[in-house]
Image (tube, rainbow, N blue to C red; front, side):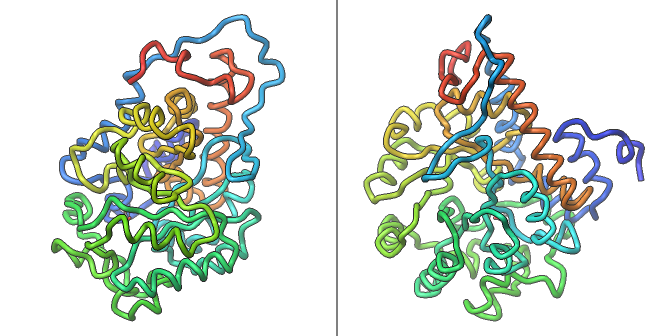
Length: 363
Ligand code: GLV
């Protein structure tokens, strides 16, 4: 183990550095990699660094609160855990370990449909209602069955991912020879077909994927909306016009996302397109954002640009890989502490005070 591994871990980036040592190379590359040249992956981060905060001075921040409300529930601070696949790649106990860590933080996890633990078992272990991420599967009947199953098990919202109609050029994981190890499967999909649940993730390096439908259209979203009784968020929105259509078909929210730079390389940073989307639908939809959030100041900047909340994905998995449940907790608590400091130092005592005037210029 390298020196980095034993150094104190102070930031989310420190957990990434430690995960590089803790994980087999192929799992690290699957997790850390983007697609293509990783241009979008890098832009997600640099976009935040390119925008400056203009603090308000001499405001009383002695009773600062990070609390925020959406979909009828209070959240301790405006950060959720993004849906991420295959937690058993990063810890022997997989999602159960993640949930133990998240439970300590009062934050909400979005369970991935590609988890290595069933949604029912995840929800049973979680102290808060989980959200659930789903793809539209080639078998629409199965998609409905899965969504109804998770709602029955207590899911609070559904995020439907729409930015991967075909496979993406995941060059880094392919080069590292990444394959989902034998014995690890997407248990939620077992009834889709034995093949689908066990199909190796990257062995399908053709254009299409046997699990995700390539013919998904707005009518699938309308259909989903018609039988779903809980909030539906469209995940993977980059164009304002698509956010407007999401609203027209009845979605309650949009997640401005480029799949963490893992779908189409060359698309803009999410932080760059967030303001325009929030301008168009922010009054009527819950607008959220993910991609490149690593510091409390990133959370502040995203909120100042119109997001009601943001997601982190890779960072909590780095925590999981490095130190199990306590690593997950630590990553979230670091971000919480940084965000509270960013609010205080910029003169904001409550979330409502975070607005576009806090930024020198919008992206
Ligand atoms: C799955 O959605 C992934 O990004 O690997």
